[in-house]
Structures are given as structure tokens and as C-alpha cells.
Length: 557
Image 1 (cartoon, helix red, strand yellow):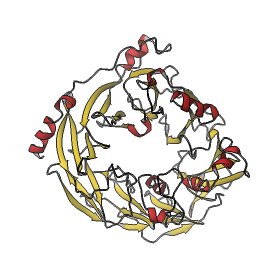
Image 2 (cartoon, rainbow, N blue to C red; image 1 turned 30 degrees about the horizontal axis):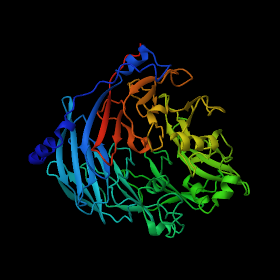
Image 3 (cartoon, rainbow, N blue to C red; image 1 turned 180 degrees about the horizontal axis):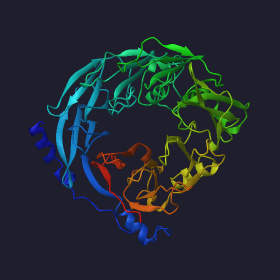
Image 4 (tube, rainbow, N blue to C red; image 1 turned 90 degrees about the vertical axis):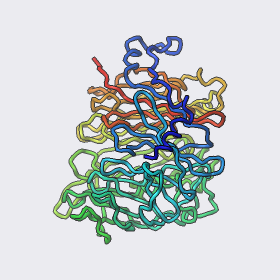
């Protein structure tokens, strides 16, 4: 550890970093909610311990948690550009009841993005400079070369060093590997037992939209092709959605699969836990037009805004490959396709069709017939050009089957009026629980989120409510956490019954930023298998703040 840097870090902004642990407010005022009661408010007080960290003044800050010192409590790294455009790094750690500054350091002036690699019981912060990945050593506060790798990365925001997620455990050994997309394929590097990495190997087909212009609303100059723009913070998740991990030959080792125009390329994992550089191919009888939901966004790129909203256009339908993973718990991969159909933005509807995989001596074969279907009630799945729509795919109730949550910001005429007049939006949540071998025709559970607008008086930013899923009380069932206002989170505890969640939420009084989608996240900060919360409060006039909510055990009786 750099003792001088640690002392400097812990002495700067001392008043903000050494604030006492705050207990959550035990009762929610009856004037703001008629449904909360004394019992539920008291339980909510025990859900989390709330801390606050003053992270100082900056134009923008990137926040990255990780177990960088090898302890059982995560540290938090904050990176920003200072007034001289130097890359500054701060590290905070929990000591007793206080989050203290542990380190102040300066990164290489060429750092373009950061990520965290896990392996060997410790996390490592990695940085990317042109043509090279480096790892940051907190003991010496220096960067060392990790590997030479060329990534055609371009920053869309010159005032921020983004966090890009380029790590996955590809071979199931418990260590993070590197999956770095590029225009002509994917750089794959496997982490070995000693923490070193194999030489990067380029696998997979080129980006299918490399010659297309940038996406509408993506912040990309559409006069330049996708290949000319290169990898950005916005497009990287689109690239990574094309990587599928499936044990295709049933040897107990996961393989890498890519769709390549009219067939699949499969790179088998060998006994060394590495991947064959030469793919084999296979085809399926499942009908779809292209790979990835972002294909549907490209289909809208050349649409006239007027015709798309008014519906003065021909009806269109497109089906894409959406998922390649085991959904029904039989340890065999399944295929899910996503179809969009409609004339206008307001009439477009989505349909998910699942084709179960079956084992044969030659490998996995997928049913040509549809095995189960989900008809979304909302518009356009995750492809709304305006507003916000997403899905969360996970096992909500720990039964080994994959469930799905859809969230949609209501952007019809009423939703648009609400956003313009009240500075707030309405959100619909739908949950589909896999049971009896199929997904139900109707949602297993649904919620209409209507934020309280009174706390928004005088605010200019539109309030986008966040919806999170995770186990916060250690009972192996997911809780639903949604924002009700700028001062309130509602926690719906998971249940064993068919409703998935209790109907009366617990109330947490905690300040929230306007842009919660970018600034509120769940992560296990202390290795107790319960999800904690990091809430980022950016500011252009005051020091940035972090609220850290550490989950406590809770007695639900």
C-alpha cells in the first residue's frame, strides 16, 4: 500500500468521508403514503445500513466496486478527469463505521476505459490505453502491461473514463476471462491459474452492420459507418449480445457459438479449458431473419419519424435470434426468438417464441415447432426508439428455471403528456415465471409504477423510476425494488406463492438521483450472497456523493 497516498486520501474531504453510519428512517410519513404502516416501516429500517461518501468535485465520475485488496468487504474506486484532464483515481474502503479514503493516484494520460477482472481471490482493476491492456496495482499505485491488444475504441464522451464490461468466465473455472469485441470479430483471452492470460485469439464473425451508419439517437455521427465509428460505450453491449455460451457436445465444457449470416459457428472448449481456433458449423430449422435484438433497431434507422408515429406505412414484421441458453432447466440449450410487428410506433407488438433443445448423438437439435410463447402487452420490447424498455432474465425463485421481467416506460400519448407536464414517467412491470414446462399466456405478476410527483416540485430533470431485482435478505428469493419518488424506494419481498412478491411494499427513505437508470445499481459488496445498493449522486455545483446501502439479515416473521 502507498502509505503517503493513503494518508493524503484519508485526510482530503475528511468531513464527507467520515460521516457516521446513518440509520434509515423508521417510519414513512402518512401524508406521503396511505399504504405504509408502522410494522412495515419498522422492518424496512432493518433492511440496510446506509453510508454516505463525499467523492469530491468533478465534471463526471465513474464508480467501480471491487475486492482490490483481497478483503471480504469491497473497496470502491472513483475515477474522473480533473481540470487539467489528468486521469485521477480515488479508492475508498469501509473501516469500522466509516468509509475512508485509502488511495489517491494518477493514471496513465492515455487511459480510455476501465474494467475489473476477478480471479485468485482478488479483483484487479484493468485499464485500456491505445493498443494495450494494463492492470493497476493499488500497493504501488502504478499500472503494468497486461497484454497487447488492438481495440478500435472511440469515446463518445470526452469528459468521462467509462467502465466497459469486457470480462466473462467463459470456461467455468471461476476466473474472469476477456471477451473484447472488435469490428472483425472478438478477442478471446483465458485467465490461467497463476493470474496470467493466454495470448488473445480472434474468434467469431465480423460485425454484420460494419458498413451501416450509426444508430439513431446513439450519439454517433450517422455520416460515418459503424466500422469507422468503432467500439463505443454505447455499442459494446450490442456486440457482446452476439456471444453465446453453450455446452453443445455435452462433454461438460461450455463452448462459444456465434451466428454467421446463415449458420452457427461453434468453437469447442478443449481439456486445457481453452477454445479451438477453428470452428465447426451447424444449422437449425428455427426461422429467424438475423441475430440480435439490435438488428431491429437498425431496421428503424431509415424510417421516417412521421410515418412511423402516424402509421402511414406498410405493416412490417421481423424475427431475430434473441437467446441461446437453457430456459427449462434440463441442462440443454434452448432458442428464443423475438418478433416485432406493426405499422406504427404505438401499435408495434412483440412476441417471444421458445424452441426447446433436444439431445441427439450428434449434439443438440432444436424443435422446429414453437414450444412456448410470450405475448408482450407492452410496445416493442426493448426496441423503443423513445423512452425506456428492458428485460431481466434470471431465476427469481431459485427453482432452477429461467424467469423473465419486462419493464416499460409508458410512452403513449398519456405517457408523453405526463413526462412533459409533470416531469415524470409511468412504468409497467410484467413477470413471467416458467412453470409446468411453459411460460404463461398472462403475466404471473404485474406492477404499475406511478411515482409520487410532489418531491419533484421545481425539478427540471425528468424522473425515470428504477426497477431492480435481487435477493437482499438472504432467503434465495429475489426482491423487487422500485423508486416511488426522489426520496423513497419500495421493496417488495419475494414469496413462495404464485404472486412472486408481497403486495404491500416496505418503505426505504433514501435520496435518489433523477437519472436512476445510470446511477443506481445492485452488487454484493461483502460476499454474503445478499445484494447491496450503490446510489450515485452527480452534481455540477456541489461535490459528488455516493450512498452505500449494505444489506442486513432480516427476520420476516
